[in-house]
Length: 132
Image (cartoon, rainbow, N blue to C red; front, side, top):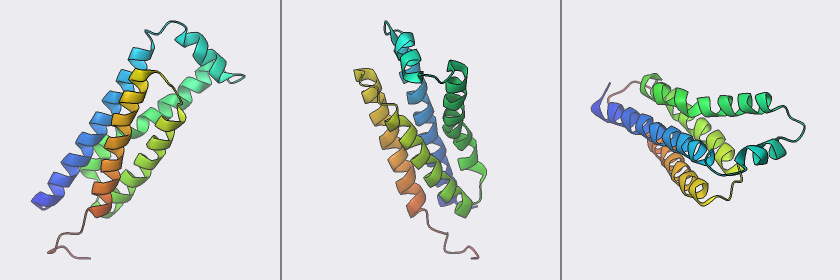
C-alpha cells in the first residue's frame, strides 16, 4: 500500500469520525429542548417509537461502520462505499428537517464533511505502480 493510499484512508476515516460526533452532538443537545420528546412522538405518527429508534440506529450505524471500512476496504470498493454511504447519510441528515439552530449548524458540518468524503473518494486515483 502506498503512502498516498494510506493518507486517503486516514482522511476518509477521520471525516466519518467528524460526521458521527456531529450527529451524536445534535441528538444529545436536542434532548435538552423542552417538548422535544413530544415533538418526536408527533413526528412518528402511527409508527411505534421503538421502530423509529431502530430505523435511526440503522442509519447512524452507516457512519460508524464507515470509520472502519474506510481503512480496510480495497481502493475501488472503498471509493464506492464512501460515496454511497455519504449520499445516504446526507439524505438522512437533511430529511431530519429540524429547524433548531444547533441542529442546522451541526447538520451543516455533517453535510460539508460528507461532501468532502464524496470529493476525496471520487478523486482517489489508482497509484501509478499498481496493477489494474
